[in-house]
Length: 320
DNA sequence: AACTCGGGGGA
DNA sequence: TCCCCAGAGTT
Image 1: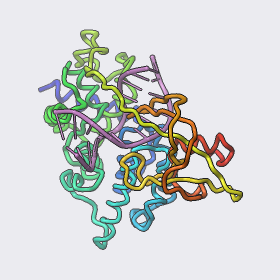
Image 2 (image 1 turned 180 degrees about the horizontal axis):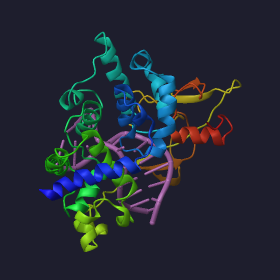
Image 3 (image 1 turned 180 degrees about the vertical axis):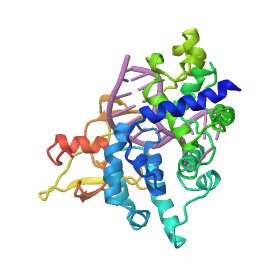
């Protein structure tokens, strides 16, 4: 069909002219692309860029990464969030290097076996590094084609993403360069087909977009209702010794912020509530210190962002 | 299928 | 205040 041909060709032509100069695009090696994909999960380019540059300078090769301690990797990840990504990255690096000479995965299915690499990342890496004709579906792609094809699915659910991927197979089969086609869909969602106020006047898909034709851009993608956040009660206590070391507690087995160091928790007496992404935090006043606290140099251990902010405010840590 | 996991930025 | 972001792992 002519329309399918137009989508791939229009996307790739637009991408060639409009793509942002991301560092891993200059020389797309497996290590660089893998690292960039993990960091970019649920994270914007502006947030990732300084971390990516610093991380690659600190761990220039997969061998250097594999030789690192988890605490050092978490320190490099400090502030970026979703710390399981860093732990899985290190776990995978150790596995790559332990098998002797590093052999990178040779297909999307092989990439999907790597810890921290799911359906999206496996498809992205296989298309960019290997030229595999495997479509990616991320938040950008879901939004773009929910509008183009006026799809009413909830694309936060996996089955909806799988159905869209199946439909996109026909499109990527017409692409000149599969990796560019995939990146073009995502770049279009990030730069043109944005969540609010899409720039349809400059969109290469406007001519084939149902939402643009009907003026229903705001109605797609459909969003389901949101649930009430759980409440966690935590209190921050700041204790420092003469050497400038701070009393901190490391999360050892809890899922939240595992491996990072925080200020010790204490007993309650409510003051104010703060809302985070996945829970409400009720800050309370000090009564008594609990937990296995140790004096640590806060510059040497990975801290949560909340802890870092408190220590900077208290003059115990310089801003980075 | 639902839940958990960070933090920043935009409107 | 709520939504969004190159999602994945666990239950």
